[in-house]
Amino acid sequence: MKSKLKEDSSCESISKNSCCGSSEPKQIEIQALKDHWNKSYETKALEQLGWYEENPTPSLQLIEKTGLKSNARIFNAGAGATTLVDELLKKGFQNIIINDLSSTAIELLKNRLGEKASNLHWIEDDLTNARELQKIKEIDLWHDRAVLHFFHDRKEQKNYFDLIRNVVKPGGFVIIAAFNLEGATSCSGLPVFRYNAEMIKERIGEDFELIEAFDYTFTMPSKNTREYVYSLFKRMQ
Image 1 (cartoon, rainbow, N blue to C red):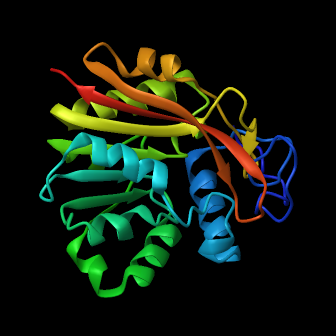
Image 2: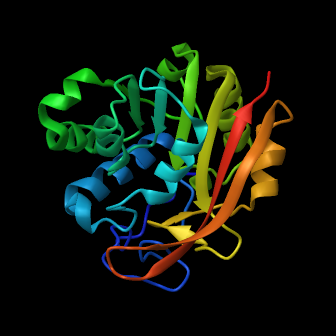
Image 3: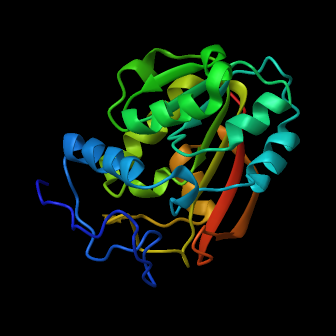
């Protein structure tokens, strides 16, 4: 648990089975993990990070299917370098909660958004060992792109899905995008756990109905591609 990350974990190179270029991923403790992600955001511009998505088209398409109104309470898990929040603001959504484990990522995103950042709710917290996040309730939409697959341990996965069940209200929606079974086996020096839609459905529980799922090939800033599965669920009770 206390193994150090390899020096190559900042996405400087790209390998076949890694989203960001490191090989030999290591499991690390929470403080080291926070330090790792802070370093990732400190050493590269947001637009150069391996997971940076200029146009969050798949997410927007699924959000459109929910039919949510502009006052919907939207939770963006592990927002990091997201551009989705920009698009949501353009569409009139204002009740947005931004989460990340990295304080550096949050500050960079706040700076990029400028005055618009003051209208959003920001929470620095761990999705698998939540404290502040346990306090939020009545979420209309949980959105996670490229976070779930970092939770390799079954306890971490359980805590993550328990949190979803705790905060998403009946009638609310969940969008999860993770590496699919053909995707990378590691990212940024960390192991990833790959999914298909049925695996996510099993873990999220019977209270959630799978509305739509599809595989998606994401083109990284490096022009390499990574394979994702996108899924949209609705909480029935």
